[in-house]
Image 1 (cartoon, rainbow, N blue to C red):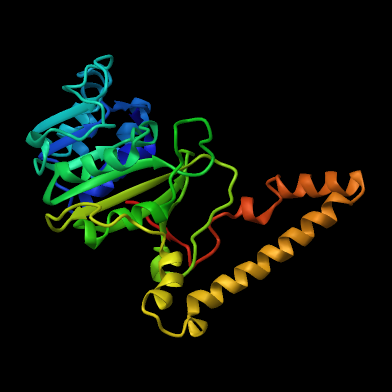
Image 2 (cartoon, rainbow, N blue to C red):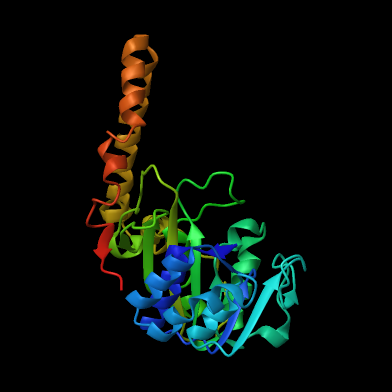
Length: 310
């Protein structure tokens, strides 16, 4: 668990969006996984000139852990949580189980820098995080999405966090950002599938992370109703209201997908009977950087809007 070039940038960007780090909780004790020069560059880009001059202390004072860096962002109280004592977390707790009442509504910022994907009981773990945030505070998640097979139990979809950090659960998403795990990778803001009435998809060739920045706007019972995927909710809605479902835009979209799926099945049958050289050429194009879906994975402007950071 650690904060890379993009991880440290994510926290500094969160600060520009109004996040207060005064009382911070880390889910997993985060380390700084970047070079001193990279951290200094990041700090200077965000205007932390004094901290940039003290980068050796930020990297070394806590044995490479992130507490000094968080202190530079304004953290006074810093708690870390882990299921084991092996990295010296201040609190030992398995997030597969509910958090103690004493930690609820306590923190101005709760940071998941790459822990939740390793916790089997994700609904309990994310609920713990949400309950730990005070009203007006923020959750910051830096979490794996595409191409992290084998890294943890899960790779997460933007749709999941849009539905979890929603008004019925006392939260609102401030920003959802996606970036590839390359030092100079661009950042893109991700559209809410419910807002654009379409699934937000991605095919790319690089390991990719999401930055989830959410504000707690009210104290409510979290997951009183379980989150549902937005396009299915839209599809079900006419039937729930016992209205004429045949005119539903969601049903029309569903029908288009069904036709597309039928076409895909036919294409696969054609592929099955194609000569071996044709199959080989198809695979080279489909799974190479020549494929425009992989060489320009964020080109759909409905899904992704490029951002200037800082």
